[in-house]
Image: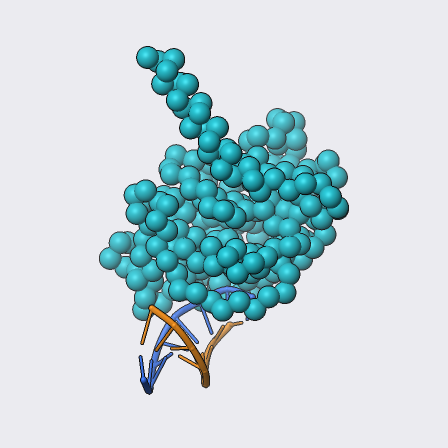
Length: 256
DNA sequence: CTGAACGTC
DNA sequence: GACGTTCAG
C-alpha cells in the first residue's frame, strides 16, 4: 500500500515536471537559456501552479502569490504594443484565486509580479500575465516608480544573457488588506535574478520597501539568505551547495 | 514603461 | 463588458 502510494506520487511528480519541461530551450546561441523553469523552483508550503510561461505559489490566506518564477530571454522582450486585456481569476488555483474586484477603488494598483513587459514574445504570453494570481496590491507611485525601474533594469540584463527571475513579497500576519476577500497589502517586495554567467552562476536580489521613494533601486540590494530568513522559502536550493552558499550569502554585484 | 478612471454604447 | 480618451509617475 505504502509502496503503491509512493509510486503514484512519483508519477504525479513526473507528470508535473513534464508539464513545464517543454520550455526547455536549446542551446543555440549566447542568448538562449541553459536551464529550465523546473530547475530552480523555490520551495513552497502552498499550491504551486504551472502556467505555460511561468509558475507561481499561491498563498490563500493572503490571496496572492508568495512567489512567481519565470525565465526571461531576448524573445520575451521584443518590441510589441499589445492591448491590455482585463484581469481574469486564475482558475488553475484550486482554492480559488482572488477576484480583481478586490482592487477596484482600493487605491492600489493591480501590480504584476511576472511583468507584462516580460512576456512580449506573443500576445498569448502577454495575456497570460493578466491573471489575479499574478498580482499584488501596489501603490501606484511604487509600481510606476522604483519597482518599474527594477523591472526595466532586469530587462536590460536579459538582453545580454537569459535570466531566471523569482518575484514575490513578504507575507506576514500583521498586514492590512483590501477588498471583501482581504487581499494582503505587502510591506516589502523582492526580486531574485539568476544567470548562468558562462558556468559561473551569479545572483542579484533586491528587497524593496512598498513605498514611494526617490532612492535608487540599487540601494535595496540584499543577499538571498536575507530574503530566505524573512520568507522561510529556500531559493535555488537545486544548485550545488558550494555554489548556492557562494551566491546567496553576499550581495556582490560582480558579473552584472 | 507601470497603471487607473471616466464617458458612451 | 468593450472601446476610446485622459490622466499620473
